[in-house]
Image (cartoon, rainbow, N blue to C red):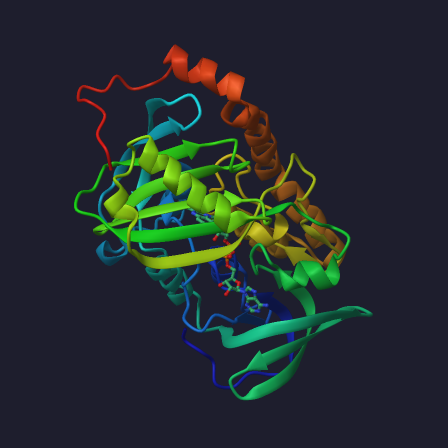
Length: 367
Ligand SMILES: Cc1cc2nc3c(=O)[nH]c(=O)nc-3n(C[C@H](O)[C@H](O)[C@H](O)COP(=O)(O)OP(=O)(O)OC[C@H]3O[C@@H](n4cnc5c(N)ncnc54)[C@H](O)[C@@H]3O)c2cc1C
């Protein structure tokens, strides 16, 4: 992470978190008008557990910005369909949907590199935030020790476990799950993303896809017995002949983190006054598929525009809430779609009907 050597103790805007939401805001906010500090606590930028799949919505946003991704960010294979696997009714269907398969760490670093030099960047963990009068005081842990920073406007872009949300909006809670992901060496690569449903072990869906010679298996689970549920799913995938047992033998890497999941608009919190939340910290993530990169980029764009239009704290939040109306509607629509994905009877009807499914020309293959 490129760091600014000299930084002050007061900024007009502090952004906590340099994931897609924070980096995009730092790039898009008028940093000549506001003096901006972007902080991130990660030892190495971009080590977040993630599928690294860019949905069509995320691709559209990159197109709107006229950003093309350098070749080194793309990984193989590129994905053209979603294979839906229901472990309970033992049915499989393929649906058309294309994802760009990317190296998430490199993507985050790429976004961070686009932040202009007029923004100060600091590697620091934000330990606490205190609101006082018109501004905020942040207690930071840096490699040189504890630091205190003051600001007029505070932005929490610090993901599912947002410290800004916890400290400034403690009553505004969101449902969270534990996401677990394991990587395994794989001999072959399938050009699709498998979406695995098993109501018995997870209220969400799990996923299997390939990345540069590895098979990634992951899922989101309720926090109690999450690891056990993850292992049960692996056993079921072996028993149903979907993944050969030897593939699961030696994980190359195991990752875990929290993932937010809004329920309609409960859980969404854009902030108020002069404190704002963007990306997953605000609850902007798809409740059906847990895709969040497009939501992070889009909410950051809305806040940058609100800063452009707003003359004081109150106006900015009003413009930001207006600007994220479409995003809120998208969350609502995904919540409406959710029962069709997660209700066993509705899902069975859809899978058996074959509506919108791709007619596969070859026999189903194992991963
Ligand atoms: C296992 C898993 C797989 C996923 N796969 C996909 C996928 O394939 N496609 C997709 O679109 N979405 C996916 N998502 C969702 C997506 O990763 C997130 O929604 C997206 O990264 C949100 O971006 P963000 O910038 O809001 O937050 P984040 O990407 O979480 O970034 C937050 C940043 O804040 C920093 N931070 C956190 N706390 C502090 C602190 N106290 N002090 C300083 N810095 C702090 C972190 O270091 C991090 O850099 C996945 C999520 C999980 C958990």
